[in-house]
Length: 176
Image 1 (tube, one colour):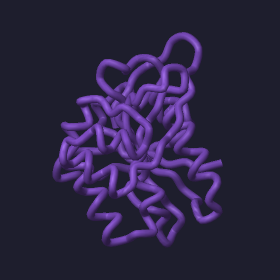
Image 2 (tube, one colour):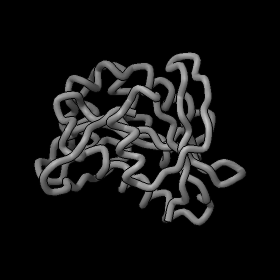
Image 3 (tube, rainbow, N blue to C red):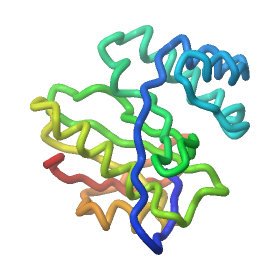
């Protein structure tokens, strides 16, 4: 997760579902086709996220019920611009746990957009009665994301090793 500290009025974001058609277009770097399907203009940054689009496509193929949980564009309501992407790693597991993930575009950080994004992710999770726990995994070096999840009342519950990201601290909270 990547984000910022905040100053000024709190922004409001909208999370727009990215289905497999959109993700395939993004994987082909066809942002115009992805935009035609969603009504959004996707920034060039999305061309650098092939690994994630591929992962989401595979997960949606293997578990179609996860589609509504995985991939969303983060849209700044004030400007209508796509400022990042967010979602959950999977739909709720057997224990009612979901894990959030979000990225705000580097040139949009420091404006409170990640806090607004996490607010929306928590609201989405709270609307599903199956969800009992929301998890976030954050690098111990990512002070901005640590501040975002602290702001939202996540509590430290442990750590894990990720083969790609290294050490991650685990945080959890109830969705409501």
